[in-house]
Length: 119
Image (tube, rainbow, N blue to C red):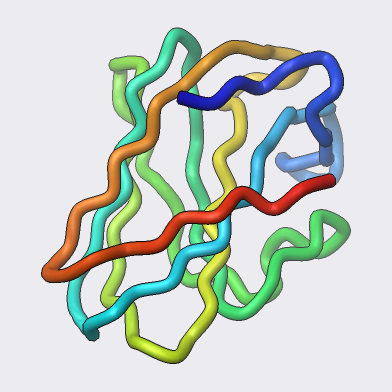
């Protein structure tokens, strides 16, 4: 369980505008394969997956994929991931200035290490 709070980092996710709270999570896999990340939340969330690093000033740089919006309060991000590569999962709000808790689930052919990246 994690939570986006008043103290959580923000960035202008859409067209360089708005304050979107977000959390960054480093992802490492032990086997090449297709992996998915699902969020179950009290708020509408959006997810982005990056290769190597994430710079909130340039949110399209290193972007591999992003979640598709669904009408429920969850997101789904999937990609083929390789060992020995660092991935960054960014969990952010669908709307600006929203905060709340969420649960993240990762599914794939082998173990996945998820480490929150601090401020």
